[in-house]
Image (tube, rainbow, N blue to C red; front, side, top):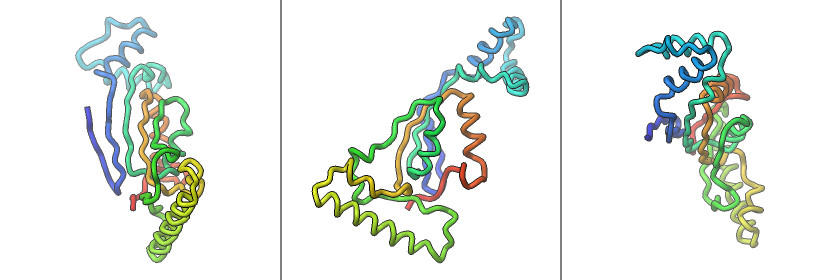
Length: 183
């Protein structure tokens, strides 16, 4: 299974999902109430909405989704990995050569300063190359790299945790949001 959504260079791919997740969630919730006799062709829709409305979200933990996120900044991945109830595999700056790293330009930088930002990134790339040429291993040279570096991350979590992440991180608040175009 592979579905992609991209915008501003960010690429999100659904890698895997629990088969028939709504039915799994309904089965879990109905276990709590011993109300299997109420299962119908479309009963899961209303039942799941009622569970959420009541704040009974533990049945959501029985369905999982795994996403691959590309062309995101290290700053974004740092926000994401703060959520502990998930499995994470991220591109390693310890083993991956970052001499020509791509980077994300924050959306909040005024247009008149964007070229200056590009120059700063070029200077940092040069610093990284300098330390590599001096014999530093990638794992040590990476200390000069910015949070603007583009990264790739694969994340698996249950639906309850995804609801929590989306609620916090898709907010328009600058400290919580994801995104920004990759350069």
